[in-house]
Amino acid sequence: LSIALSSASLDRELLWKSCDKKGEVFGRNSLGTTMSGFNFKPTDEMSGLFLSDALMGEASEEPASSSAVEERLIDGAPQRKRVRDTAEQDAVLSSDIFDALGGTLPGNPIPDFMEDSGQPSGRWHTQMSEDEIVKFLAFFDQGKPNTQPVQHSVNFSSMNFNDGTPATTTSRISDITDIANNLHTQLEHLRWDQQQMLVPPNPQVLEKINQQQLNMIRLIEEAQTGLANILETTLLSPPLLAQTDRLQSELFFLMASVKLFQEELYFMAQPNASAAPSRCFATLIIRKQPFPKPIKQNTKSSSSLEDPVLVQLITAPKCDCQAVTPVKAVMNYDEFTNTKATFTIEGKQQKLDDALQARFAELRFKQGTRLKMVRLKFTVDVQFVQLDGMMGKANLESNLSEPFIVMTNENQWESAESNLLRKALFPAPGRNPDDVASVPWFRFANTIQRHYLKATRQDPANPTRPLSRYDMDYLHRNQFNCVERVVEQDFDRFWIWFGKVMHKIRHQKPFIFLWLKGVVYGFITREDAERVLMDQPSGAFLVRFSDRVAGKVAITYKIVDMGEASIKHFLLNPVKELVTLPDFVQQRETFTHLLKLRTDFASSAAGPIEGLVEKGVAMKEFYTRNMQPIDGYVEEVPP
Image 1 (cartoon, helix red, strand yellow):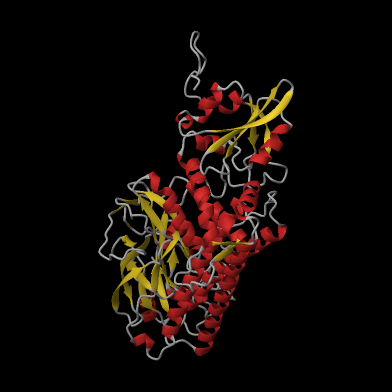
Image 2 (cartoon, rainbow, N blue to C red):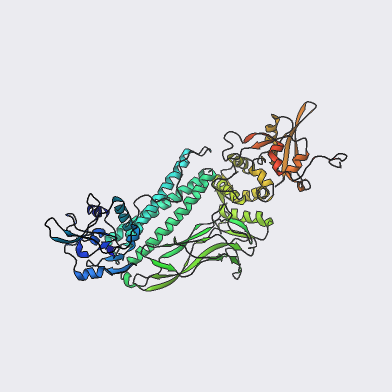
């Protein structure tokens, strides 16, 4: 059998009042309602109330007529059906509650025939345990907004960051995280309230919901401004930087959702809105993406440590729509003057899942984009129910993805990354030629960190070796002379040197593994290297990037000859680089112990050096050959 229940809200307190201390749930027999072996009879609190009215939080003064009962009940109907009850309220006839309680459809219920008077009562009665009542309430609470804070991916652990980040910064990020989570809960309640609105809406209800939406938009804008301010005034550690990126994505989602709600609300406020054809108040939104970055053709767009593109269909509260096609990825040609340019995309179609999300984990691009930036947008065809009850069709489009460049080979990486970084740092096109494009140093450093972690294929929230505070200080002092703002021309000069360094770290093996392990010191000037090694024993050495020869590696080492110590510098030229760095070091008896670095972000707090390590311990796993000299042969031919 089925029970007539309102599709509106469940008055939980009133329902609990209908339960006696033994856990008996009661209702009026005039409804003829039975449910999985337990039935209902009225108590004093429920006198004159129908169970369905109790669930709606409303009371009826008169018992239901037999015709009303017939309207409410559909014998043997396991699925939900829309009907009208005597109070002209939408109701749902459902047998799903049996499954919710772990029960089965009962046979004939046992009547409680006798009252104290000994006369037949005509009422049904059964016992429910407290656990059954909890399940019962939970079943009817499914459509209601959760009153508890919603848990989201933007949860922020109030960990103690020992990376030099000011406590005020971590506190501000934590506060914005709380705001985002609270906004998610408010959005859920706002959806519920707007869903229950009549069309045309009551003016007072309309104004109340409108003010809630405007307040949410204001809070989102303030949170977005707060994040932008943090990125421009603080050098963030990778975990905090990843957290701000997640927050920016969540705030974008919240803003898109609230504005969609607002568009629907304004449409409902129009005269004769219920009779007018309406557009589909729904849209696609990109929730996650691995861009911006260069991608090699025929290679998956996301690495194993990156989020693939995730697209979600979001709808306004009263919008009832269903996708009739898969979600499709379409290329958007930002920089192409030839509008006929076409590129083949593999894995470009995905169906929406039950959460209305499509995950594009196998995106591949078959042709290069000739070092020009492109973006993705996503489309889907839907059918939807208009407010006038008629069916409509619509094609929905997502926002554009971040830009990316498809490379035909790895040699294009430096140019591709330069174009994407310039776009991220100096995005304003068509500016006055007399204006000098510039960004605050901290925003520049945070952007470089983000692109570096993508380029070296590291986990952005927990990298093996990020650019440390020491590395950033080196770049700030030696490449930008400690300026407060970086201008575009300085970026171009910087990238000529840094782009080759990045490409060497990214592309050369086993150099990248040496770098990640801290075997390569990297960013240190010639003079600082000499000072560091002067206090070390003879044979100590470090591996650094050359200041003057972009992308080249130098070995600075200490020797003691005739009791006199000196520091030497050896530049690995292209001929020498035919031999790997570990093999080259293995061949030289002059090099005995390596200065190994700490690889954490805060390495400048107590100095970047971890210790002095014997070269075989540091590099042995990367040796490719047995370099022991063979008797009767010299190791090298002198010039």
